[in-house]
Image (cartoon, rainbow, N blue to C red):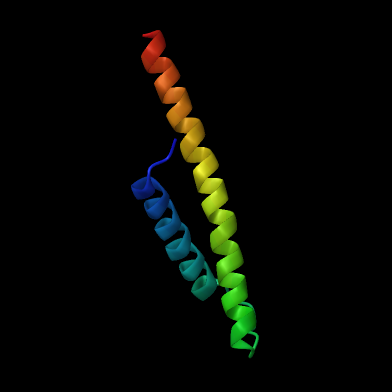
Length: 69
């Protein structure tokens, strides 16, 4: 199970990566700020889910190896 601290760190990392990705992207910006915020939030949510899956799989594999050895 993930603790609040781990969830916060993964969420913060996802937000930082999505904001960096938004600025690095060289597409033409949409003049509507609500659309830009929506895109940043959606990308952060997707990144959070991906990071959580990778983190939990890594944690599971590490704990399984530790129990076997």
